[in-house]
Length: 198
Image (cartoon, rainbow, N blue to C red; front, side, top):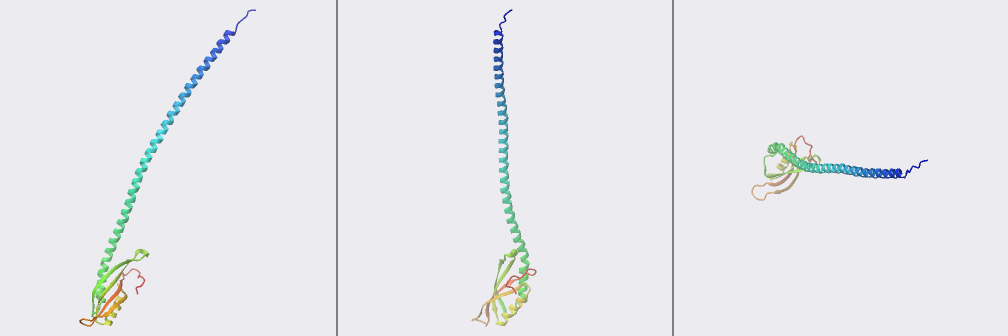
């Protein structure tokens, strides 16, 4: 029987397998490095995109903050303009009332009463911010009944109501007369009378 030596063939097969293993290992290592590089590139690109989005959002937020500040400023200006318009409207509405009050004052002032000064002060009540006007008249009356008649006529008038009579004093020089100070209120028809008016 012939003898066949298989040692060389086995050694060659082992070397072949060893060679294939190292080639496969090298290819796997290269493939792993390529995969890591690609994943790193993709993640870097995503991070850059997110950074761009964040910077754009920050820019938009800054713009929106400026716009919000401008809107707040415009709201304040609008409120101031509304207040001015309301004031102008109130002044325009009260302008004819002053004329009517003077007309009424001429009608209620009897003979023998001379008014020397008068003051008009505005007071704003809390409910509905309704403006009422307090009036202070100073003058002279020939007699006390004349002053009483003046007060009665004022109370019966549409636009004037007396509040209090103060400082009635006899005049010591010249013709006999009574100096007086009278507090009153201006009533605007159509509005509710405030407390203290009759």
